[in-house]
Image (cartoon, rainbow, N blue to C red; front, side):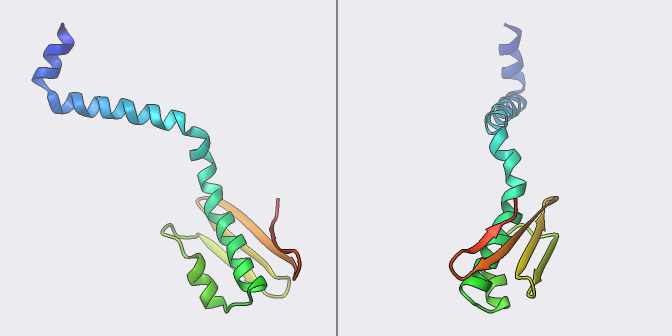
Length: 109
């Protein structure tokens, strides 16, 4: 019966506690997807930029605009000699390499 009195006396705090518990449950349920998220940004940027630049042969500025994200990259490099693109974001770094006209670009493992 004490919990009902608490809810009546502090409805906003009770609602915030309930929302917090629901949020914690959702985060626990989605923990694997949330752990993979930091890898997605750098890998996507490296692979898509490499494909745009070396497979589709667009300009560097066009490809930078194509892969622009809401979250900023911490580092980005395009080595035109080896045709390797490296992108770092959220503490993770990924590279993509152009293999040839028939193979396209591939993410490094």
